[in-house]
Length: 91
Image: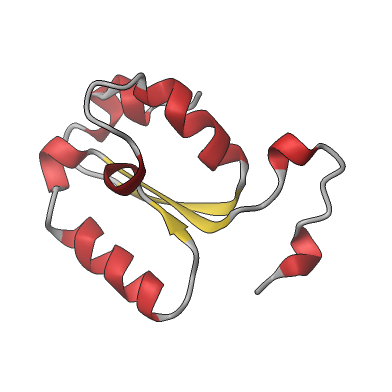
C-alpha cells in the first residue's frame, strides 16, 4: 500500500502496519475503538490492535513493542484511566 515509507535497513523494524491502535480495553472495550478499528479495516488500513494479536496472560509490553515500532503511526484513544495503565505507557 504505502511501500515508500518501508525503507528501513534493519529487517526487525520493517513497516507491517499502517496504524497501531492504542486504547485501554477495560475502559473502552467493544465501544469506540471497535468501531474505529472496523472503519480503518474497511478503508484497507493495516491496523494492529492488541485484542486480535495477543493471548490473554502474555507479557503485553513485550508483545506490543514490535508492532509499535513496525507501524507508520499510532492512534491513541484516550479514556479516563488510559494513563494509569502500565500496558498503555510507551515501551
